[in-house]
Image (cartoon, rainbow, N blue to C red):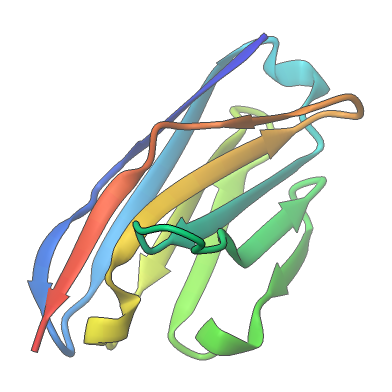
Length: 117
């Protein structure tokens, strides 16, 4: 089992920055990919992939956040940060971290990010 905990969310104004952190515990040695997702609360909304890091080296970003968001992590400690710059009101969502081994992915409880205009 792996436990995932996100932190760092909050209320900011448009144009400001925020840094989210994801920490894992438990059987973390089996984790080989970690990622950040977000979801706007409400019926029928999808969880949107933002960025992933595989093996602590290979990084992939969704087109929607390229140039504004960056991820960095520790492949030994299995942590993953999300640096968000130039935030926009449409970035308002619950942000989730996912840690995955070969069998299953584990989710945290999410952290709320609210960007006011």
